[in-house]
Length: 418
Image (cartoon, rainbow, N blue to C red):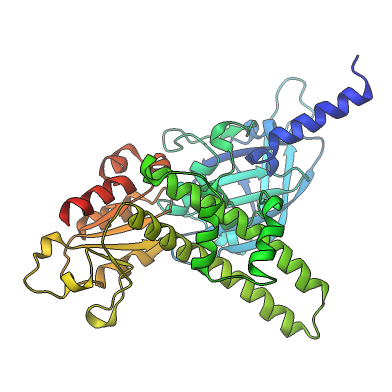
C-alpha cells in the first residue's frame, strides 16, 4: 500500500502533467449538434438534451436531481462579444429505481444563450475541475464553431447525432499553445500563462516600470531566442510570437499588480485602467506579428515598404518590392505583391480588398485557426490568398490545406518577383 508521501507525490505528478494541457481547465468534455427539439425555446422552459447517457462519463451516475452551476456562452463570427448567461444544469436518472435500466437526462433553462441557439449549432459541455460546467453553443458553419471543435479534439459530428465524449485531455493535441490560448479566451477561460520570471528583472531593468513600444518589445523578445530565420520561417514566426506573448504577460502581471497595490481614488479610474489593459492586449498582438514579419523580411533580404500610403488614403501593411515601384506606372503590376496582416480575421479580412488597387491578387497573413470553408471560398472568389504558418494549417480541412500558402512559400514568391 502506498504511503501518504507517495500518494502526495503521485498527485503532484498528475498536476504537473495537467499543467499546460486542457485537463488543467476541464475534467471532461462532450460535443454534439443541436437538434430541432433541443434548440426550440417554444417547446419548454426546460430544455432536455437528447441521448444524455454518454454524459455519465463526465457527470457520473445521478443520485436524485443533481444541479451543477453553469455558465452558458453563445458564439458566432459576427458579434465582437459573446452572449453570456449564468444558471444551472440539472442531471438526473429518469429510471433511477429501475433494477437494470438507466435513462439519464440533462436539462438546461431558457436563457439569452438558448434563445440564440438554432438547429445544427455546435454544443460543447465541459466539466470544470471545481465542479461547475461551461456550456458553449457556436453557430453552425462558423469559424468559431470550427475552432471550438478543433480545440477540444472532438470528431466530425455531422455523421452521427449523439455525443462525442472525451475524458482524458492530456495528449499533444490538448497542449495549450498560442492558437489554443486564443480560443480559450474567446470562450471565457482565463489561461494561466507560463511565467518567464528569469526575464522579469531584466525587463524591469531595461524598460523600467512601464511598457516599451511594440517594436522595442518585439525586438527584445527575438533577442531572447537563439534561432535562425533560414532554418524555417514558419517555425520562427510562431516561436517569436509565443515568446513575446509569454514575456508580455510576465511583465504585464508585474505592472498590473504594482498598479493595483497603489489603489484607485474612484471607480471610474479603475474602469479606465481596466479598459486600457484590455485594449493594449488586443492591439499588441497584431503589431507584434507585423514586427516579427518585418524582421524575417529583413533577414531574408526581401525589399518592402511597410504601411505605405496608397489610393483612397489606405495603408496596406506591406507592399513588395516597395512604394516607389508601386507608384511607377512603368513597373509591371504582376511583379507587385501586397500583404495584409491580421492576427485574427472574422469579417475584417475584406478590408484588405480595398487596399492597393494596382494589385489584383492580394495576400493576407493571419494566425486565425480553422476559418470556415464559407469564408475561404469567398476569399478565393475575390482573389485573396490566405497565408498561414505551417503549424496552424492542420486546423483546416484537407481541401483548404491544398490551397493555403505558408510563410516560406510566400517569401519565395516575393523573392522570385523582385
